[in-house]
Length: 416
Image (spheres, rainbow, N blue to C red):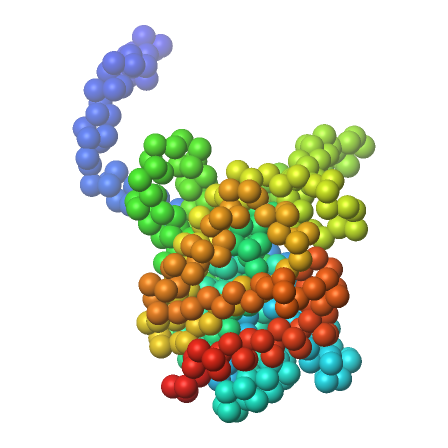
């Protein structure tokens, strides 16, 4: 009995291979199966991504998310918008505090720019409504993202004033575009009428893929002659693009850290992974003084030039995209190089000092815009600053008066 069954039940590896080869080489069943697997993989991937984005966006709520939401979801449509990083936030807040308007407001959530509006009206004769959308820590990619959303929400202003400092173009201590809370807040916001046809989460994914980092990274690799010759740059660009497409991918270190920490707590042990990660983050902060203003003497910090030079090239690409959006939508863009102290300038990496702001001025000129360089040591002294970069009340009012005077002198509001 056993001898009869054995030939039927047992086959040599060769015979098994021969029997199944026709199925392998292109049977309809296999094609359908593979297609189904690909489709289901994409469905599951998108579902996980949407869940992850929703969960993280709730967990990573920021002070300025309310400020942005209130503006974009309101009926307001100001003539002039002020945006930029903390240098712009402080300028608007402190100048309005001189009028007694900011007594009960938080600086990071304040969206007024009344004193600047008054200075512009006095010098140009134009009475224009103005709001301030500047936020702490914003980089140039945030300015571009804001401009694209203004177009999407049909809130295109007549004028955009971008008050910026060199740090906004190279601070390697700040998150990449798609990694920032600013990007998560902005990418998930869409006009109410568009959500009737396409759900907002799907529009957010569309933003990330089509208008976000991956396409920009591909363009950078294609047009940069040195990119394909540099293995480190290729690795960086690829990792950056994957991170933009997959939220889980670029959160992988934090997820691994959390999982390791939980596992170590359950076993009553210490997580060396967590400690090494925290130590690495601390070392990075020490190398980049712009990532966090410290009370320690600035001379104790050393700027790591290499990553910041690379970040400058990246943010410059977003600056060009900002110029393109403004010219295409007939927005008058006024770029202001804000005054800072000599202490601040000393922190700028040496390779970037000759490139700022000359390269920005050159790019702006190509698109018909101007950079107003107001970083004048003969006008602004140490007494005009709160710290090494942010203006106080007197300094902010002085800046607005100088800015309005320069706009009037150049006739930048004549066609409004």
